[in-house]
Amino acid sequence: MKEQLADILDQVLRRNPGEREFHQAVREVFESLEPVLRKNPQYVDAAVLERLCEPERQIIFRVPWVDDEGRVRINRGFRVEYNSALGPFKGGLRFHPSVYLGIVKFLGFEQVFKNSLTGMPIGGGKGGSDFDPRGRSQGEVMRFCQSFMTELYRHLGEHTDVPAGDIGVGGREIGYLFGQYKRITNRWEAGVLTGKGLSWGGSLVRTEATGYGTVLFAERMLGTRGQSFDGRRVVVSGAGNVAQYAIQKAQQLGGHVVGCSDSTGYVLDERGIDLPLLQQVREAERLPVSVYAERRGATFVPGRRVWEVGAEVALPCATQNELDEDDAAALVRSGVLAVSEGANMPTTPAAVALLTEAGVLFAPGKAANAGGVATSALEMQQNASRDAWTFDYTEQRLAGIMHGIHDRCLATADEYGQPGSYVAGANIAGFTKVADAMLALGVV
Ligand code: NDP
Ligand code: 2IT
Image (cartoon, rainbow, N blue to C red; front, side):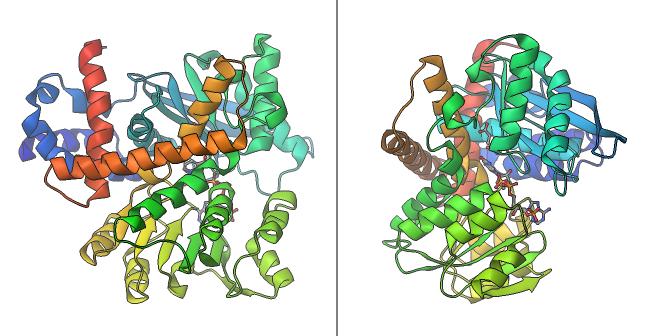
């Protein structure tokens, strides 16, 4: 079985040259699957793995737009419709200059297993563009979003493919995208996008859901050792949507959050992060975290990673491969108890190995950050029934889903002889549900 897996991986690497992040994501899942394939040879016979590594559809398109100076600009748009065995393609859009096919495919691949773990009827997909929203005016962002949707709309639909936000795509961008979809199709089709505003079909708790879920997962994990967030020193990377609400929930649970960051460096604020100020700087004014440090009288350390300040709970909530072996070693030296991934694939494989060997509780993103997409599915459910739930009820649903994922990861890891490995549990539980559906649906 080991050789068979190695052969399939080899093929994936050869068929997708240069897509480093995609290779990393596939390799990481394959490392958990040997016992599953041994127990379930039908997956091998039906080439489930080979099919899972080939997206159902990959769309790449030109996005022309005009900047404020009247210059024509061209970006590249992507939507990878990865797997629809469990439901319509579902997953975010990322606008960041680093976006290329390998990033979108890694995110789409991860999304398939994550969405499966939520237990909701959603397949996996991801999209985005190499457009850089930083420094762009409101008008430029609107025109870009309109042009992006002018191509993408033909591939979407509430039963077909349902995007949401990710890095560089928040409520503002979802609004412009929804407006253009509505105009082109002449349909007020709420279920075609999630992360919508509350007055036009959005769900309470969706904004908070990813960060909240990451912390709820970590709290449950700490609970298995009789520990909690209460009184713990916490550091968070990033200062965007996921980071902000991870900070809020960690603080609600009694955590002392002393650090956060962005692509320019990190803030150390021993008094504890002042979230309203951080949100004023990042959301309202769209400025870097150095401005927060300045106004707050906290320390700003340019060009370095926040992990060096040490913590008992570390929450990577910025981007892929942002916590490496050296960072992990620094965290272990500082006595870290748990790492819960709010971002997608933020911890490098060597760092995961180091943390695991040191006995640190480690929650992989496809489990720990699934609260965002799970609440997107709750938004779709409310849209389908033309209903709007209360904050408390929706948060209860989110908490139930996160606890369910946590417990299923542990039970699956036990069943497959790797007790305590959330990585193995998430990969295997995520995989088997999709694989069973693919078997049932035949070779399609
Ligand atoms: P935002 O755009 O709101 O925030 C992103 C944050 O990460 C910013 O602080 C940004 O800093 C920082 N960042 C982005 N790219 C880099 C980089 N290359 N190097 C260093 N810092 C970087 O995005 P989100 O908070 O929505 O997303 C954060 C992570 O969470 C991503 O990995 C995303 O895939 C994942 N995620 C998001 C979900 C959601 O619902 N939004 C759901 C599940 C996972 P700067 O502004 O300086 O670029
Ligand atoms: O990575 C993710 O799960 C997201 N960016 C959220 C996707 C969604 O459809 O809500």
